[in-house]
Every structure is written in C-alpha cells, then in structure tokens.
Image: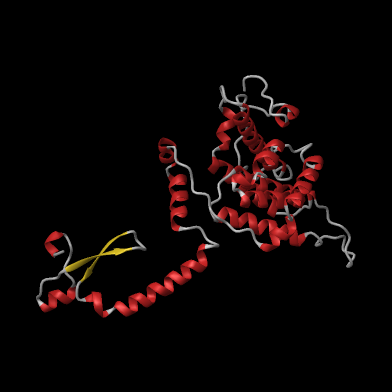
Length: 310
C-alpha cells in the first residue's frame, strides 16, 4: 500500500525522502486492518509481542468478571438508539456475571431458594404483589432459562426484605445484625446494573431493597434507591405499559405485561410515600392519569387468568 492509496507518509520517510510503503496487518483488538510502515514491522516486533501477551493475560483475568466490549457496545446502542433493535428484532447479549461466594452461601441450593421464596410469598407478596409467583417457580427457577444472575439477586433480596433485626450481644437493638446481608445485596445489585443486566428481575430486586430501607428507616438511601429504580424502569420502558392496552395476547404474555405494570405502580407509590414529609421535594415519576391502567385482581394474576380487556 502506498500513499497514493489514501495513506499518509510518515515523518521518517519524509525526512529520508523515500517512498513510504505500508503493509496491511490485521489488528485483532480493533477488528480491522491497521496500516503500519514497513520499516517498523521488525524493529518493534519483540516489544509488540511482549505487550500483546501481557494484554491478553490481563484480558483473560478480567473477562470472567467484566462484560466484553461487544456487550458494552450493544448495551450502549440499545440505550441510545432502541429503534435499531426493534426494527431488526435483536436481543441484547446476556452478560455472564458470576455469582459471588458470599451470595451463594446466603441463598443456598435450589431447595433453600424455594424455601426463601415460599416465605416471601407468604409474608410480603400478600400486600406487595410485584413478583409473579408462577413466573418465579416455573420460569426463573428452571435451569434451562440460564438466568443465574437474576435468580440469585432476586432471591437474595427476597431474603433481605423478609429478615427482621434481632437483639444482639451488644444490646443495641440489633441495628447492625442484618447489615452484612444488606451490604451484600446492595453491592450485588450494583454489580448487576454496572454489568448491563437489563431485566425486570433487577428492578424487582431494587424495589425489595428499597422496601427494606423504608422499613428500617435507612435514609437517605431509601430515597436514592427509589430514584434509581425509577430511572431503571424508564430505561426498560415499562412506564409506557401503564398507558397502552395489551390487546389480544396469550396468558403468559399478558402475565408479564401485568407484572411490569405492577412494578411501575410500586415505584410510583414508594416515590410519593418518601415525599410525604417533604412535599417540596421533586418526584422521580410522573403522576398517573385517568388513562393509566390499574393492577388487576391479585388472585387472577397469580393464577394467570386474564380478566377484562386491559
């Protein structure tokens, strides 16, 4: 390749008044052919190989805990230009976020996860029905769904909001007895968001964390968590489902739409509850209108029985 082909002569060749010839070399890191002066191809070969080996070793160490560049680019494009994914009917790559050992120790095996979920549906689900019972047991618990990250995070937050502080040896009322579980849940939820995991299960986990913070009067963390949940819901686009009729769809699809509507209603309620003591504080969500769909009957939703034309 010569400068006449579009490449620019380097300073070294200009000073020597020689023709600057380029070799086409495929750059694996950039995914394209890089133009390199021919006289540079051998001088820095050893240094390039050493640097490449060091970079590949570091990349292998980080690949298990950080999303790949392709996943990051896909998440960025999906957020900036979602219509591109809609028109091409594309799906986001699912980040492979490992489950930390402390999280695995807290949620246990499949039997322990079922026990935690049973307690949650017995105590919390009765008055805050935002996690589909049938969807959790028949879909999320199914190993074929390959949603290990979301399952672990949601189960951890289920256990968190079902836990109550108990008096400890220091006699301080147990204010710190559950802090390790709370910190682990907050950290893992943040890691899932940072890794680009976009699903309603991450939002459900965030709402359950906010519920725990509200119940334990952890302020202003509760206010900040609800605000983050509002932003996350807007990024998922679930706020629009409260104003859009679902039309004709199967029971499973209707159940998922209803679940997303309930999640957005939970964010709306928490957002306003936190502003009762200070009404001048701006809300993170818009006020519902007369066209906003309300949640359907709880029993019908649990049984996946569609009612009406909503």
